[in-house]
Length: 217
Image (cartoon, rainbow, N blue to C red; front, top):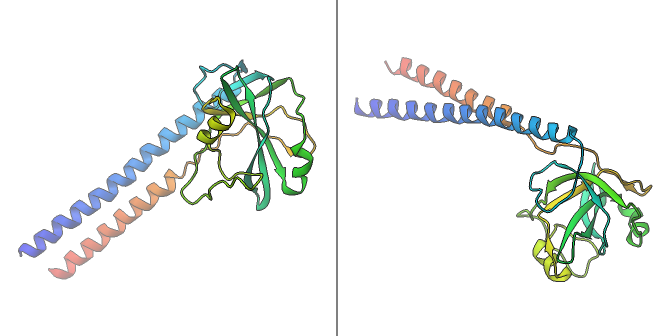
C-alpha cells in the first residue's frame, strides 16, 4: 500500500512539473510577442543620428561616413549558397569604431568587393547585437581572408580602438554585387510548439496514470 501511495505522489508531482513547464512556455510566448511588437514599432519610427549612447537593438539610425578600416568578410550561408557578410569598421572618433554590416555577397563576387571603396556619405540602417561565437563555430584563422565569427577582443587589439557593442545593419547600400539588408526582426518564437508539447505530455501522463490506477484496483 505504501508503494502505491509513493507512486501516486510521484505521478502527481511529475504531471504538475510538466504542466508548469507548459505554462512557463505560454508566458514566454506572450513576452516574446510583446518584445517583437515593440521592436517592430521601433523600425517604424524615423531614423535618428547615431551616437554612442544608443544601446537598444533595432533602433533606426543615420551615420555620417567617417574614415573606414579594411572590410571583414564573415562566412555565412544564405539559402544553402556560400557567401560572406561584408562588415566594415568605421571610425566614430579617434578612440572607437562601429561595425557596419553592408550586406551579403556571393563567394564568386568576393574579389570585386575586396578593393571596393564604399562612397555612401550617409549610412542608414538599424542597430543589432553582435552575435558571439557559438560552441561549434570554427576558430578564426589568420591564414584565411575571411572569419567565422566577429572577435571583438582581436579587433580591439588590431585597430587599437574600442568597438561599439552593436552592429549597424545598413539598409541604404546600392551595390550590384552585394545583396542589401532589409528591415527584419530576427527573433524566433517557438514557444507555442513547446507549450503544446509539455501540455500534451501532461495529458498523456494523466491518462496513463488513471488507466494504471483502474487496472491496479
